[in-house]
Image 1 (cartoon, rainbow, N blue to C red):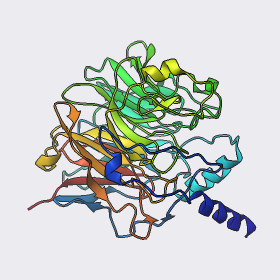
Image 2: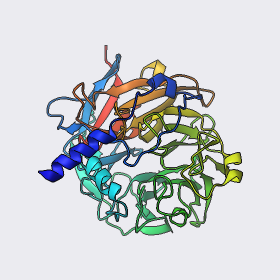
Image 3: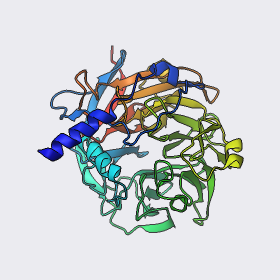
Length: 432
């Protein structure tokens, strides 16, 4: 009882964080950046988790939603295959060591928000056997993986980004299970800490390169700069040889990577740093300049210096690039997919990016917990984000679900993985 009371007291104290900025002020190419705040204990606020039951997320006007699959185990990614099958990555992070007292509290908070579920370490295949859009057939496609996250198919090679390695499996169209052992293409930064364990993945349009997002090993180098070797970056990997290089750096957690269909540029959805206040630092999506540096840990949103980082690196701060588009502070974008003229979406959502915002755990009021669409023109964002799917967090701050990966299926609808609701949702234009 005393522990529960002290935990509640810490949450109450940490939530006293001052007024929050208007969401509109923190979205777009020029977000409002207020003064920094620093804390002994970071602000933490979570909602009570309650299953969906018979309810579902709320689609925006003109859209409809259906449950593609339910009863999954912490689904993090969805990956449509060319034949119409859908792969669902069911996964969570490996156990990480605890070095600071506040990490214990943070772990309890995140766990109560559904972030500490056991990892199934598998990929499930969904199949619509009779073409009615209901995906009745379900099978274990791959299992005994190590906290998988990103998936990419190139020809007959299926790549899975585990928490510590990129693995290649042979794929045969129509198979419902892969039994052949995988081959490691390249090691990826892993334990023993592996703070941001998710490894996002996308293939180049010609299939010759693979791009892997590797998150930092800390919020802001509290585990030492040595723990950040080759992290907080997007890697470019040669698919034939496994040779790799850092494609872009200074990206605290590039939790999703995607190829913009007009320019073929690599884009990333990036989770920025915590513990500077409810309105710092905005998470963002951005195109990646080869060899570009985006600030972490030394600065944010270009050259705004983070005074917590020692020693300083004014040379790197001077080179820091400004991200293209802010999404708001602590929305936690974990999914990014381009519409690519989705046939089953409204005309207003045919050109742009869908973003799965997993939602805040360290902000009052909450932020994120939704899927948004950002309109593009000529390969660049040109509009404010609009809601696509909401209701994951209800008016009573009850959490029914949290969106993660998003993808366009082969018919042109949007798929959304929900790791707290243990479901995959399918969004399309409402039928007349």
